[in-house]
Amino acid sequence: MHAGAGDAREPRVSRARFAEIFRSRRMAVLFALGFSSGLPLLLSGQTLSAWMTAEGLSLKTIAVFSLVALPYTFKFLWAPLLDRYRLPFLGRRRGFLVVFQIGLIAAIAAMGSLSPSSTATWELAVLVGDTLLTTGPFSSLTALACCAVLVAFLSASQDIVVDAYNTDLLRPDERAAGSAVYVLGYRVAMLVTGTLALILADHLPWRAIFLTLAALMLVGVAATLVAEEPECAAPPRSLAAAVARPFAALFSRRRIVVMLLFVVLYKFGDQLASTLTMPFYKRELGFTFTEIATLNKLLGFTGTLVGGLSAGLLVARFGVRRMLLLFGALQAATNLLYVLLAVVGKSYAMLAAAVFTDNLANAMGTAAFVALLMSLCDTGVSATQYALLTSLSSLGGRAFGWIGADLVAWGGYPFFFAATAAIAIPALLLVPLLPLDRSTEPVGSPVLAPDG
Image (cartoon, rainbow, N blue to C red):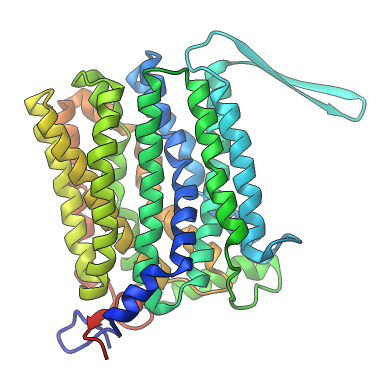
């Protein structure tokens, strides 16, 4: 029995044990892997949007480019391969992880060598036997889109393995802390790509910026090499089993339809809002990239740090379901701050409040959400199950991000941000319906008890 139903209580753990978990070497590795996972995300999203904004591309083109991130939504399609097979080095999870990280370094560097506004054309030539096959010519913008898709594919693949690694590695009493630390690393990386890149954009060419970000991926490579390989259940015996077993186990859970609907809706509003925040800051309000980045650096990082660490403590104290409701409401309220900012116009105070609260709420909501998803996965097939769940969680933002430009055109930015806040309501209404039995309530959300 678990807390939340009035007559149930969640597993308990002492404060000393909770502090010990946070101080462990395992948490440092999770932070670094979170950083490695978060770094490429904005490169095919907000950072790319900023680059295209600076190059003068249309709002419609920027919104349509949100489709390049669709590999994050469909990553469950190749996740069974990563559950079934292993490379002959570093173990089942870490072998794939280091390969994807090295691939990302090369792909990010290649992406930075292009320009969205260039009139240059490109041609790809491949030698097959004695025959030279060529494609193209295609524009620099098309080449950039292809590179962005490749970055998204490799990043999504890295996420598959990291999520499976975390699920297989963390014990039940470590999940609340582990998910908070991982999300903190993830959010810090997003601040680097959303802050450092923008500051450099006012002083350096984008090629240098992308080379710098590619080099930062070495943090993930180093973490993978020193990480421990988790012990987990035996992998599926065949590829067919790797496809069938995760789905059969997941769909046997109680109220799974409610759970999956919640997963789809919980982050949709924030994802939609993020597609056009950069043009909103730059074009609508007139902030410079340096001003935006400075606020993200000072207040965004503070919000992420406070939100990530406090989420681990609050989830541990009150349980996942209650905190999903509280953090989800806070995420929606943050979007209402952007409504006020759109009405007031260029205001450093309002932007500071929006940036701090946005990062605080997102770090808290994501930490609780990750703990929930981890609790639904089974070791042995966690790569496929977690990939399916996170793919569903990004479905709205990835598939429908393009409608943001139409919402702005129809009612302006105040209407757009108000709509993204309203989208959160259906997910919040589903929270009381989430199952609370041991098959679905995260065991990693313990209630703190006095020492001893």
